[in-house]
Image (tube, rainbow, N blue to C red):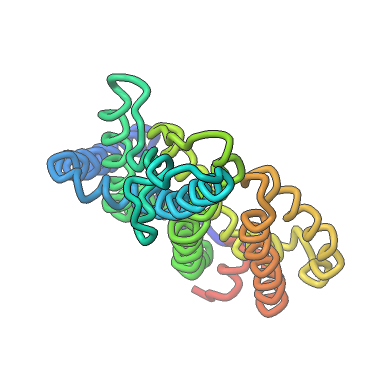
Length: 299
């Protein structure tokens, strides 16, 4: 059954190119204003935002301090006859403060490194706070050109996808980054003094957290491939071994050369693959197009 132009909801909402550009301009302006206001407010009150961003760094450094104190203790014990104050601040055996302390604050390599770090923190905060409003504005622009079935598919899928992405980012922030940023320098702490640089730390935090956020979208990708008929849901099980090898390779590339960190990256990917496979089997294939909606709607 074909849909006439009078009954086609997309045709009914069709606009000229100029009208499309005007609407896009308005929605982009609203988005930019929202982002600008939140960014300005974040810059005024940047200190707590920076403290949140640096939390994984300080967690990692606290663990490194314990390792550094243990290294100094072993050096003192190996240096027979040496006074304890050669390696520690005092002679008190309960005082584990090394004479040469580990640097706990991140270092800035250039005069502008600090301000750029603060601006990046504020920008990500603005994207997190104003992002839902920006997405809503863009959705209002795009939704006018979609069929009702396609809009319903987005309404059902987007909250799930957003939740998975946020879960992946939080997993990276609370678990992956603190451990990985500790594990890397801990491998050579006895030979090389740790001295974290702020720009490299932010890139490390950004890469791992956002990378995990994208990895956590795997079930959604698998579900959509199955729903649109691109991949048969029953065939995902036969790809399980290939995916396991691919997950290990991907984790080895994205994470530091530490087995525990690689497992922390690969294990969620394997679990998410199984979740996506079960969701695809439960949902089954379905073509998301206007014809199916038109057939279901006699009007």
